[in-house]
Length: 156
Image 1 (cartoon, rainbow, N blue to C red):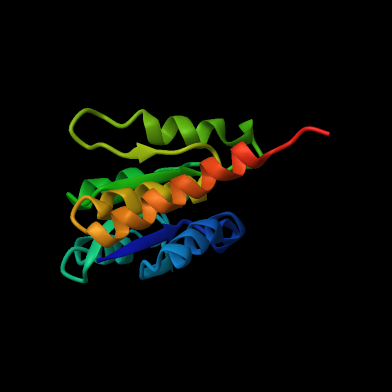
Image 2: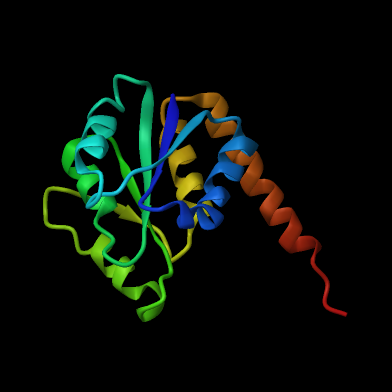
């Protein structure tokens, strides 16, 4: 399975390449797109509705400002959707965060921190790891390495 990474603007890529880097590290295939919930709604709908048939296991959707992208994606699929609020010029991304976490009952969007692209990818890997033992093992190894780094830390 692969992951879809969609962002509302190419200007979101500097943040979202963190998702791509994590997925590369775990060897997870992904497809990245710039599609807007507001400016390209028909193209977004078609891409999301075909995601399962195209082998996707989850979608990471990033947007700032009027951050409706993740919610619109979730409305068109039953795949897990992980929202990444992007820090915008106004309100430091809080508006984006609230747009994603305040989804109506019945259409969930898992939401990570503002500019939390790496955590979004890690969550996507964990989701795929539910049915992929090799990926689950890679996640266990990743967590072990993180713990080792902390334990090896010294304060001089």
